[in-house]
Image 1 (cartoon, rainbow, N blue to C red):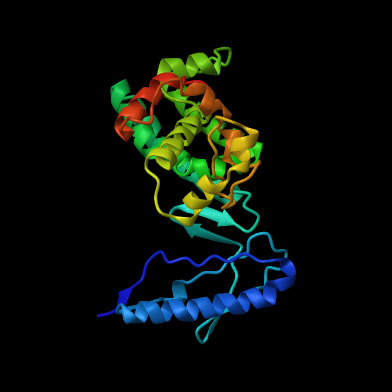
Image 2 (cartoon, rainbow, N blue to C red; image 1 turned 180 degrees about the vertical axis):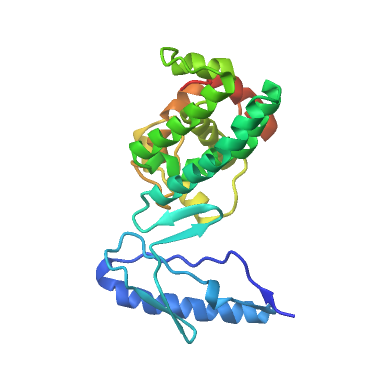
Length: 275
């Protein structure tokens, strides 16, 4: 019986001029990793192994994995999120919109038969869950036009849900009638929960250690929490710290002693449906 190792990732960063050396190092890391897996009675499925080079213009990069050469892909899917070489998130947002379009017909059919609270539950579980999944990673650095596409998609569903097709009615009133959050409101909720988990449920990862070791931003912005840009795997002035200004202004209660369910319940009351 063969046991395969799922969701193993090796990441490596280098100067573009040192690319060849980096490729050699990655191959050596893979050899060590496969040996380690072998000692545990597991193997790596090379046919399902992918390589991607972020921020490099050459699409023909090849990495040796054992006796197999693997070409880099323009995009990879990691835990449901599609990362492309430029981290533009275009392919990921396109996938979300395609999923939403496939749900439009069944949502219309159910719209005429289900009570509002059940129809709203389906919208949350089958559509909004896809839209907001991992948004703290990709939404903050996605192109504004991509965010508008998602918002328009959600607007259509909310209008259908409320039977409101009068374009003179504002979006704020529309979402209030539906009791559904806008995409921007959902993003803020996800960011706030991410902040809570970073501060109150820290994990022993190198990213968390780097996060709390960055004292320069604490000096420049005393009292303001420091955030991590997960899309770029770094801490910096263009990271989550700038996107979290609305969170710092929104969380006006003592939350560090709350459990996660208590925090979510409290933050829902702080963040309006329409942001």
